[in-house]
Amino acid sequence: MFKEGAGNGFLQLADIAANKCVALYKCSDLVTMKFYANKHPTLATLPHPVGLSISSVKSSTRESEILFFLLIVVVIRTKKTGSVTMINYLTSSFMYNKVANLILWFYADIRLGIIYGILFILFGMLLPEPTYSGPENVVYFRTAAGLEEELQRDKRITWLVVFYTVWNPSCTNFAPVFAQLSAQYVLENLKFGKIDVGRYPDAAKKYGINDSSMSRQLPTVILFKGGKEVTRRPAADDRGKLIKFFFTEDNVKASFDLNQLYSECKANPLKKKKGATENKTDVQNAHIKSE
Image (cartoon, rainbow, N blue to C red; front, side, top):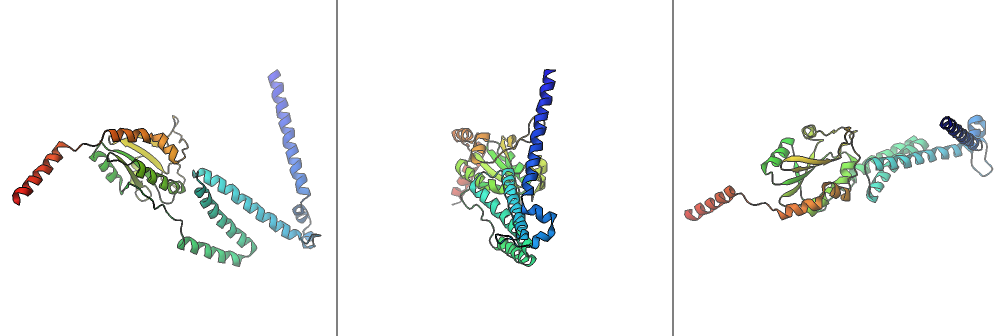
């Protein structure tokens, strides 16, 4: 009985607080010029004491709403795509800022909006975002069959493979991180690979990766040992729900234990197979005899 009364009291307090918020919002709307302009359209044509008309204030309010909406979109998109560096935030901000400016130009004058839209497209085509051009040791696979063949060719080699698409922002953000990791950890028996599931969807189907535009599995990084999958990111929980994973350098190192993996591979280098060595010796002897 006591719990029920306490619960009812809490609901009443919450209801009162909600009503206060609604009342404050309505009061704040009453003191704005936008309210009077909506109630009395003829007031929009009257001069304002400080030199501003109500129509200009309404226009300014609309522009502010668009800019605040831009800010919200930037925050949500950068969080969704896993943007964790300042460059990623700036890239997203500049892109959505251009879109917001395009809307504002159309809102002010449709002719100016068309001109800005043309310039927007031209600059995007002539000056695209620069791609990573630093050191990397990555093998690019063309088909799922090619990847499987390489995995089975020598099972002593450990592979870390990225399944990606060129149009996905998360894949674009992760590309330089993976390239730097490949240059740092590559060994004869520890290799890094990539395959574009946008161009080769059979690879996505084979390894159970959703390659649609709404996919949360792009990029997917899989570690192969002995020709078989050991672990992947993002992974699914016991209920089959994907666990959110941010593809930062530190997260990838920790999730795949790259430091330990590198030490193990370095301590056990590849030894040339006996048959291959004998064949090479026979070829050299035959070459000497022929001379």
